[in-house]
Amino acid sequence: MSNTSHQSFVNRRVLRINVGFLLAQSAGYQRIIELDMPRVRVDEDLDLDYLRGELKLSRNARGILVQGQVETSVLSECARCLTMTPIPVTFVLEELFAYPPLPEAEYAVEDTGFLDLAPLLREEAILAIPMDALCRPDCAGLCPECGKNLNEGPCDCQPEEIDPRLEALRKLRDQDDRDENT
Ligand SMILES: [Zn+2]
Ligand SMILES: [Zn+2]
Image 1 (cartoon, rainbow, N blue to C red):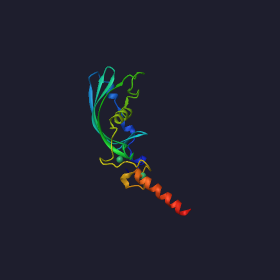
Image 2: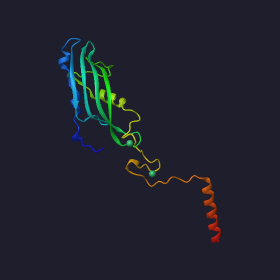
Image 3: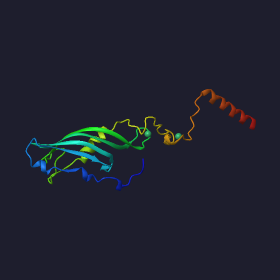
Image 4: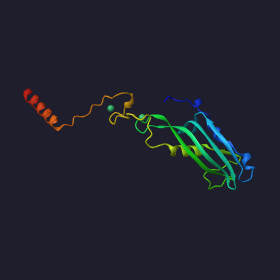
């Protein structure tokens, strides 16, 4: 994949959603929001190539419940050749953002009335990546000897001769050479 500069990413502030209008409502009030974003960096170690989906935000007695399904593509290492490659994943979100924020709550609405989806998306996206994700189904992987990416062509490593009879003949021949030279 191409090397990407910081400019090509949408700032993850777009994942902070103003829910002040919902906090002012009584329990049961709902609002649907659409997500349709280009590449966004949700954390230093995680880029989402795009982000699409529909989230339902519901006011309840304990805060804001976020529910929905999102489609994205996570830049992650191929399990064989370790090249960074976009891996499409779909996952469901269902999480309470506590309001008022409680110390024991994993996610909370900030005092400013914003709810930050980035930490939740980061956690769910990482969980959604299959352990055996490949850059392509027939990825040739890395040479175990020299580490070369074999998708780019063969390396110079020769398979070792392991036939014991050949090995014995070679030793005899070496012995003859030494005898002749003495
Ligand atoms: Zn690969
Ligand atoms: Zn090699």
